[in-house]
Length: 264
Image (tube, rainbow, N blue to C red):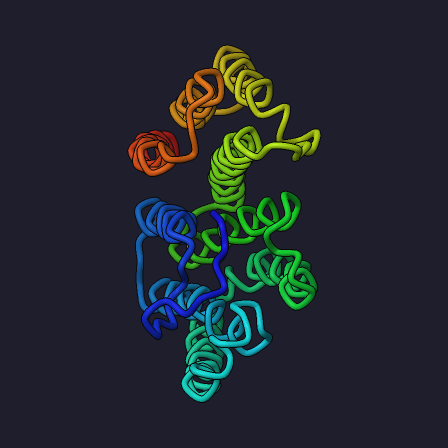
């Protein structure tokens, strides 16, 4: 999603609409796979709270422009302090109640640690940055699933599927935007978006027939890969990105359903 610098009606909520799907679907999958209890709910609260931290922190470091920083700095500072306190309380409380989730929590914490330098250096909107965001948000489901009694392997596999799904959406959107910009040479990853989608479909078919992964899980990424492939090959204009976004959300519902069937 593109980033703008003008204040958005004073809102301190994340503006990147696609990110809401990237945090929601993995967490909903985790809750659906396990037996949610207080620990799972607290860890979900911690993940969502950290997600909501992004916008006020971005304002404070000037990532939304000088005007936004001048107008919203006070509110952003208070919101940041509140969200950090809530994230710590919810996260530590959830981990205290769910020993099985403690090691698993190192995965999203590690990806978040890798992401922080990109945020503060304002490189989060690069292809690498957006792919790391997709990985980080996907991995939030792992400790939540473990807190709900899900075994580590299905939790990791489900998170990997979501990371692949969100990565395909990211590179396809970037390819569509890059095609519309004259004189802009897209990166190798962006140019290869259709091939990546086709490779995911082929790999999913192989895994489904090979049998080491439950067939619904192996095929879970296919709906999103197919949507991404169609939009990439059609060469749609950026003004149709909203339609693509809703198509990806619909495919995400199919992804989540397949993962629940596979691992529930």
